[in-house]
Image (cartoon, rainbow, N blue to C red; front, side, top):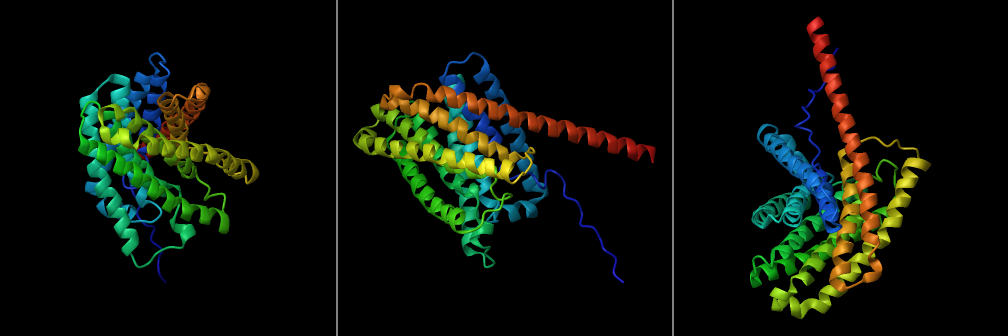
Length: 356
């Protein structure tokens, strides 16, 4: 007769959600949007939250790598979780953009851009090589999800911040690098979108699979709009960008209309998931991947409107910012509630242990 032995419970740090840096992405880009709209005190407050979250998550991730390296490596090389680590890259660049736009801290933004380049190379290729070479590959439906769009988001975030920094660091090499990353991000989007669209349309979609990271389908092209608009805005210091301006404008327009196209579908999936199929809404860190596209769409539309002189879009960034702020507040409230509940349970367990 064999006795069943419970598997040891892993610590919260060991099981830290790989995409938790989406909290920084969402908060940072809304700070940028609020700064664009010249709202008093809000950009600074959101920036402080984003910076604190970035530092905290960086420390927790370093501990996870050092202490729970096997669990970390398993997640990093997973089809379903690996590309979620690219939120680290995007968060670094969004925080860099917010540093420049909100506070004018261009030197910090420059440092963060270089950090993001190193993170992009290590994290992207670690996962990509693993999922290509592994023998036991999952089915398409089990292996691919919205986090794969972070291939585009992370790549375009490098182009977006680099282009923003170009007037401060005029260089043909920097301009070429930003153009290259901008175009690579579009290619990666086409590859991933083809696989995801096939998954959505030709395989049964379970309510539990229609998770918030699917919204990154819109967020990935929204950040492409921001990157392209930043490139056009910096063309004044780069003859290369000046020559490519008509091409960049076409890509920016294509990316914006694609992002706009996806939002009704994302809303419909959410209604089907939570109202029709009655999946309860409970806080999960993946919900930050829903907030980020809203904030990015607003900030990108504002930048595109100014760069391409599209006065008829004047109201859209304001409306989108309001929606993004509401979504951010609800998600942050969920995080705060989870933290309070966890702390209460921990104190209860400690009192129970002492009484025993």
